[in-house]
Amino acid sequence: MSNQTHLRNKMEYCFRKLYRMLVILFVLGSLGLVVLLKGQQQEEIKVTLNTRTSMMTSKCPLVTVGKLHCKLASSRSNNVASNKAKKQKNTSVNKKKAMKKKAVKKNVVTGKKLSVSKKEYEILLRIVEAETTGGDVTSKLMVANVVLNRVKHPKFPNTIEKVVFQKNQFSPTIDGRYYSVSITKETKEGVKRALDGEDQSQGALFFSARDKADPDCMKWFDQNLKRLFEYGGHEYFTFP
Image (cartoon, rainbow, N blue to C red; front, top):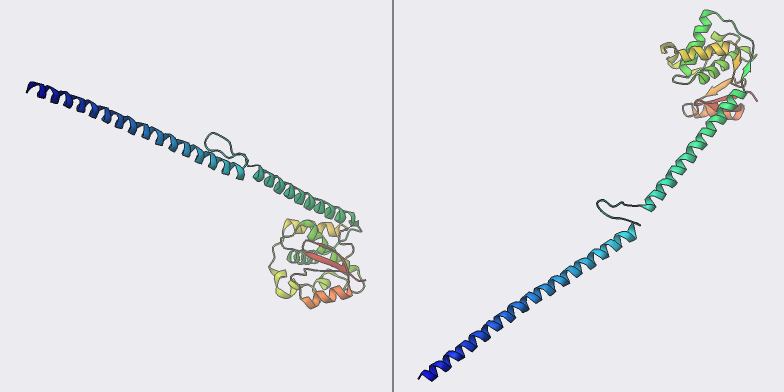
């Protein structure tokens, strides 16, 4: 009986030891599997990050986040090209303005100084102001030139008053603008220079703002007169 008990105890001991070993092996196997899976996951994440970085780099030569710089070569080249085009455009516009001013200055004619009555001086101021409201001194000088050129020309009346109020000649005397204007210092300067003999109109006897004029009137201008130049929104003409 004691031998059987001893044998049974020994077998139970062996089973318990075997059971522990199996448990230990199972735990170690589980840990190994976890480590393996974790390593694979990190590798997949690394591959994914590398793929995203490659895609980003292909779109932009050097695109990174945080403290690194984003070097957009294509964007910079586009900006350079755009700035170059703007610079060329501005240079072209400035050249045209300079040529225009040079041409106007070249056509300056200095004649005899004119003396007019206070009434006619006021009439000349008003018609120039009404026709060139908001314009520069040169525009005002040229309109005054046209009025004075007509006074000297045999086909027009021989006084400023008669020239300005000649029927259907100056629209401000028809629509009433002539009577409501406020004379500016630019108008006074332009008129003074005209009365002092300065003529930048090339002897013009007519002027008109094409975009505001009656089409039939402009058609008559184009067919019967000689176009001289355009300045300040007005085209200037004379007889052929």
